[in-house]
Image (cartoon, rainbow, N blue to C red; front, side, top):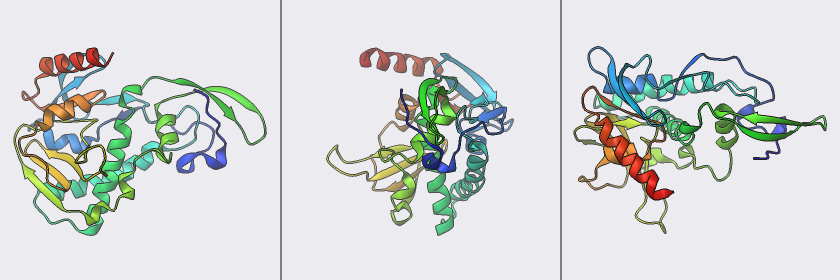
Length: 261
């Protein structure tokens, strides 16, 4: 990959140089995982890249060391994400409790879903890097490598990146479907449209193992949402203790990968 990058155009206020590192970064927000945990705050986790499933406390689930620390840009992603998580998780919890969302809660949820969707796009790239050519404002050229933090920073404001915050979702219909055995994952934000010729019509997200947030038009009630979330998740699938069929999910994803090769 060759990337033409200068500090004035760097997305999200980024500039060159490393930001302060956060050693333990949750790739799926801990406050969201808490809704799927048992009384001991334990969930079942499938790490798709490593091909293994295990029980984990929410303190340790989906943690990757220094995952949001950019290699090139000086942008504190961890601080930005923490602010979104603080307001978003509170708003999600009020939805779970059956409270009608205020406009501020709706906006907080939308920003949280946008963050979750965006981070999930590159969840399987954490720990990887790719070459880049940096064109600096002083006229010099430097060869470098972009990591996961750099990639999500670069893609954040790219014109081809779908931003849920730009869709006025607060004006759409908001419902909560009651269901059973919902899982979550880095691909848990699901985007729906009637067909390829129509615009996005619905956004869904699991609030808990029994509650599905539906923003927009209705969706089929017989759709296997958990399976779809598992298939869309690039690295992490999480469910209540004892409810996540880890070996079956591994087989499903292996079959999908074999077909796509």
